[in-house]
Length: 359
Image (cartoon, rainbow, N blue to C red):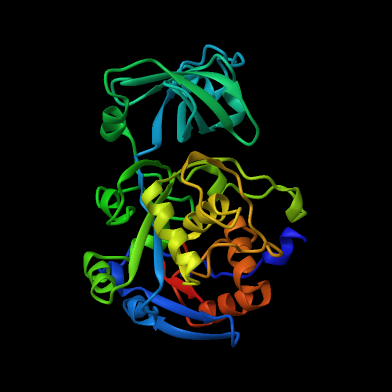
């Protein structure tokens, strides 16, 4: 399959730049696989579309302020002529780092900018008072680096003080204090994500209470969203792409709940693509295996689902692995038909946008 087969046109003005005042006020495109029909709805209807014996599975990961702004030492940079206008910024050049995955006590994989200018051995300083300092110890492709931070008494407390909410690049504004709450699900618990599992952003305590009142059973898994979820595809052929691995946890209690539902032939409904990937990876034997680990499962059309029957999801970027995942569940033609309808009806797209229920 070609990556270009998963392209579509999106007017830029349909990209949501901020969340709605009410989380649950989003529109929801209802996609029926059995009839290949789409219907305009609102997210508040979601509980009413569920069957009494459905199991809804959430990803309870929590976003942390993973974007850091700072400066570099310049000690490993190429010399700059004093006549070059850039010479004044030579030693204090601005840098940006997005922490994507912790790989050691003080080591982090990160995306850095400007990537081409930052080599191994370069020292980076973050915060007004250089509160966090790191050295680049390894170099990858496309701006990927491994940073080794100098030890501090409480690393995550420092991130809370000087870090920024890692809003996606298509949100064309600086993060605000309100994003610390709104770019987070109301049920977020396990810290570790650099991007929100955005399908969950629509839920409110009221909606969760309605699920409970209707007797809908729920379960939680954890997948820390990292580079694997949002990295762009650089290959032209889908099968040549490989996802970065992301950390997950499934507790014995959650595994038991999901396995009982599967044994009874009940629907397992995943909230978001990250929940789908966690369930399908840990359930690849036909039963959910509890535990922790890493998954680089890449789901695209032709994949045979073993656990997930339906899903709630936001709208995804053209030619993205996430668009391929939903196409695997519903079929590429139906998904592209649904997206064309959403564009025509002026749905709000991406992280702070509207959603889609595929059943």
